[in-house]
Image (cartoon, rainbow, N blue to C red; front, side, top):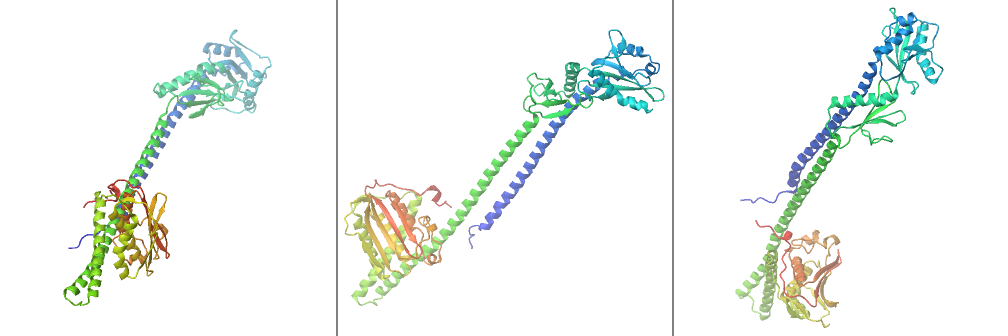
Length: 552
C-alpha cells in the first residue's frame, strides 16, 4: 500500500488562490456598491437642496408676477391722454412692494414719465433725479419700438435691473391693433423685498419640502457684494461660509444669491461617514483574512519542509545506523569463525567493534536526547568538574575512530590551569563528540582538527576547528536548528541526522552558556562553546512550543 506524501507546494498556492480570488472579487463588488450608494446619497441630497432653492426663487418670482394686473392699464389711458384714470386704477389696486409707480405715454409728444402720487391720487411730472434718469433709460427701448411702429402681439411683464438702485417692473400697453401706446411700471422697494418677500418665500419653500426640525437647513441670501441681507439663522453673517448649494434669483434681483447650509450632520455627510467606515472595516477584514491565509500558507509550508526534513532524517539515520552495525557484524563474524589467530588483530578488531559501538551509542543517545528535549523531559545533573578532564576523556574515546580515518587531533591549552565549573560532564562530552563528529564528516580531505581550551573572562571556552568545506554566512544562523543541513552539494553528499548541533545548542543553553560558529566556505569552521565558570543548578529546558513536532 502506497502512503500519500505531503501536499505539493503548488497545491497550496492553488488553494490560496481559490480563497483569495473570491475574496478580492467580493471586496471589489462591495467597494463598487458602496461608491454607488455614496454617489446616490449625494445626488439625492443635492436634488433636495436644489428643489428647496428652486422653491424660494419660484415663490419670489410668483410674488412679483402677481403685480402684473396692477400695471395692466387700459390703452385708452394713453390714447386719450387721460392719465388720471391710471391714478384711479393704481389707487384702487394698491400694489405692495412698490417704491413708486409710473406711466410713460408712447403716443403723445410729451415723452417724460409721470409718477403716481398716492396722497392726491394723481400723476405729476417728476423733478430731474437719478431715479428719473433710470426710468427714462428703462423706457427708452419701448419708445424706440413705438417710433418704428413695431407690433407687440402679447405684452409681457419685463424686469429692468441695469441700475441696481432702481430695479423696476415694466409692462408695455398695446391697443387693439397690437400697437405700443404706453408703458406702466413700478420701482421695487428693496426693504420690502428683504423684510416681506424673502421671509414669506423661504417659509413657503420650507413648508413645501417639510424637513425635520433638526434637519432644517440655514437659508441665507447674499447681495451682489456678497453681504448677507437675509438669513434664517441670525448667527449667519459676514463672508460666505460653507454653502452646500447656491442659486441666483431668476426674475428679480438676479444678481442676488440664495444659499443653503446644514445646521447639523447632513444625510450626505452620514453617507460619506458610513462609506468610509465600511471601507475601513472591509480593508481591515481583508487584511485579517490575508494575514490568516499568509499564516496558513506559512504553516503549511513549514509543515511540508518539516515533513521533508523528517523524511531525510529517517533516511540519514538509517544510513548512520547501518554503517556501524555492518562493521560490528563483519568484525564479529571474523572473530566468531576463528579466522583471526593473531592476538594483535583480535585487539584491533575489538577496538573497531568498540569504536563503532560508541558511534552507534552516540547516535542513539542523540535521538533519545532529542526526544527528551522535544517532550520537555530532558534534565541535567550538574557537578563541579574539571572541564579539561572532560575534554581529554572525550578525545580518548574518539581516538580509535580518528586514528582509523587518519585524522590528527591537536589539543591546545591542555596545560593551562582552568577553574572548575559546575557542569553535566556527560552532556558536555556529548556536545564535544557531536562537534568532533561534524569536523570528521565535513573535513573534505583535510585531516587536521584542532581542539582548544581557554578562559575568556568568566567563561571557559571549548573550540573545535576543522579545515573542511566551511559554511556560507547566510546559513550560519540556521545550522543549530533541528534537521537543518547546509544547502550545498558537498554537504548533501555526507549523511547525518541533522540533530547534533541542535542538541549542542540545547545542552550549552541549559548551562547558561552560548555556542557560536565562525566559518568561511572552503576555509573550514570553528565552533566554540562558552561555559560560565559559576553555572546554575540543574535545570530542564524544553524545546520552544513552535518547534515541537505535532502529534499525529
